[in-house]
Length: 611
Image 1 (cartoon, helix red, strand yellow):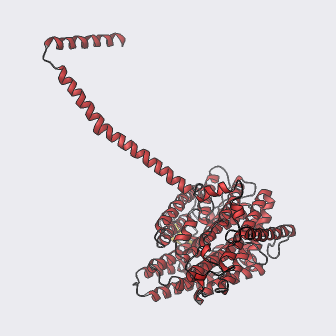
Image 2 (image 1 turned 120 degrees about the horizontal axis):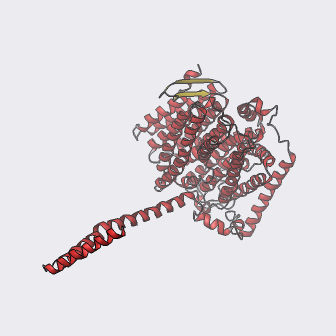
Image 3 (image 1 turned 30 degrees about the vertical axis):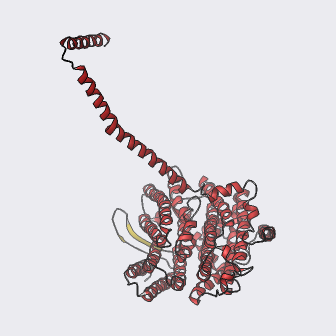
């Protein structure tokens, strides 16, 4: 029964997306209704198939390239999460996108993205996974490009960055298939040595780039300003994290024999730690609601990568748990940003303030999810972060310090954001602002509630969703749900969060403004110069790539012009000058011709003697 419906979570949204694309502009309600029905149907299918085990396969292209789908603990969990987010964000979009242009493209790309993501989750063949993965790249470009007037540039940037890393994934898949002798994911388990290490790195690059890890993150802050807000809430905030961490976990647990003793484990931990701290430092100084959230979307990916990179059961569980927690609170935070922008007309924090009185439910949802992302007990983010801290400390003190320092800056930046947008004096321009429509409130309330439930009752996701992924052999009888056992680490976290509050209050007192509460960090000696370079995109590899391409273009243009000058100018002038001299030399005097002949004969004789 389940095997027969494995294609439906893929086909329903894809076919619905194609249909939506051709619905006339005037029939807005029809598009919305079809999008809601399609995502609701996928949600029902995901609920029916949850925790089921099944597979479906038929010969697609031959030579091992089968259309193979596999449903098991992990893929059914991801399918359910993806379907839940999709339905809630479509419900939110019904009101948010009202009056916007290009609704056909928005709903079509949205539904197609859901279908292709479900295909990637269910794929049990590496080439089939790559097919869906690359389809998502094209949809990513399309979804960003339909944003505001400057969106095409951001879409191109995203396409190039993700495209290059997808090429790494492609090469890694080819190499892995060659080494394993099969393309079936469930049949691969390679020891890490020589070429297998290279295959791991290539596939890992594709996976972490999808999560937004540094240095592949720079398209996300740009897209936050240019792309439709529901896209930011679904793709960079939720779906890309689900897809990227899903693949990274499959690589670490299934495709390769990944252990704490491997150098690749350390490599992943370094990438995760640097992503945490560098991205959150950039989030701290942002003055736009959505751009600040976009840097946190990057920073939180670091915790997931760090946890999985430890190769320890506690770290992997923490990383996967943080994946779903981050998708919850980050998605909701972007939805609150969209609500503020919809009602106040701007996401610029300098033009906001006091909105908590005008939009109390939005403010409550923001507060819950801000506390969750900051790692405050008893919200979900606290428990997943503590698991990651535990694993990081076991692998090395420096990793733990960077992770905890990231939590300090996360809390500091959300204190700044919440204070600047929702507290303080109300901007007179927002006097008539009111709460958003219930279709926008329901998704925020549901997701914020899950942040509480997954914290207070963390045994539900950990015991029933996450620990089964590792299996009893890897767990070795341990249960990682409930309150953290390392009370010392919990106390350190508590102290760090208190220090973040003190830092914020001190910053407000110094500057007299919540928006500038982090300026004493931004302009601290030694750091201000680095911040200045970062704000000028000095550390953006994409910008360096553009400069390199521009330099190569200039050199190529100079070479082209130089070659053209040689052929069209220098050669012509040389030919003209030579012919002119020859004409002058032909005087008609036979004695001169005889002299030339004798000189030529002498030259020939000299050459014969020398040679």
